[in-house]
Amino acid sequence: MLRQQDVGHRIVVRRIVGIREGRPLFSDALGELVELSETHLTLATAHGPLRVPVTQVHRAKRVPPTRRPTAAAVVALERAADEAWPAPTRGRIGDWLLRSADGWTGRANSALPIGDPDRPLAAAVDEVERWYAEQGQPAMINTPLPLAAPVGTELDARGWTARPPTLVQTAPLPLPAPSSVDTPPAAGRVDLAGGQASAAGGQADAAGGQASATGGQAGRWESVVVELATAPSEGWLAVAAGRKGGLPDAARHVLTAVDQVRFAHGYVDGTLVAVGRATVTGQGRWLGLSLIEVSPEARRQGLARQVIDELAAWGVSAGATRAFLQVEQHNNAAVALYQRLGFVTHHTYLTRVAPH
Image (tube, rainbow, N blue to C red):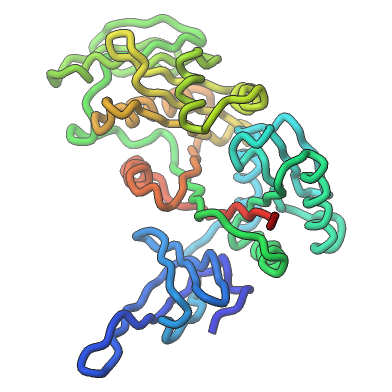
């Protein structure tokens, strides 16, 4: 059977799914083991998370991994992601990062246990708990898997819980061109950070900040204009506040305290209907995408794709060669969109929360 050391690794589970004529029926599942308890196990499969009661497990074992990134690659990407979402209050335990942003988002309010904490593991977790107690916050740790699997084992022993798995996905730049059925064409793009807008019949010039307008499909969404700015508008911030449950002062730091950052504003007839954010970090290699949001009445019209395309074009012009994003595994619609854009899972992480 499986042990805690198997968390973060690829496994196959044969489970009992029914009984026919007095004999059990079996089904096999393959995926990454993200949680193992006395009562159940959870796999991250190609079709989403799968929770299997231990009583239904007939057989389970670790299997050889598909090609997975090196530990150094995971560390580099996690550090680039930290640069892209910078918490205003920070500390260190050896190489481990401690982050606080008045409770705004898990990423900015959790420890990142990568590298050497310069002390025994149990003592490092004790220090994490003390530091967050001083901040008046619950202690949380983001555990990239399988890199931080030993940390997860220690947290399991202490009774820490786990939030749903998050996928860290990557794609090469530039992103593939949209197909005619993928998204309607945007009417134009304006880079408010440093360029002019034009209404020529071509594609956006990301490097020069020019924009193009294209004709095409009829309908209201043909008139979408995506503007890129170095700072978010009040309307943009209102969308972010609605999605994240408020916007304390620390949140503005998280959003804006990056050297290379752009905020996408998608307008239809002067109304803001789509937003997005992009950063370039990791020594200029990584374009980070976040807060891609479309208003409910404008969804399923290709606006998210248009916002991403404009942000990706800016990233290419800034020298980025790869893009990354973080998405909860159960967000099937977003995962499907990102898959069409060429994103694949680089690694996963669990946000672990200390018991009260």
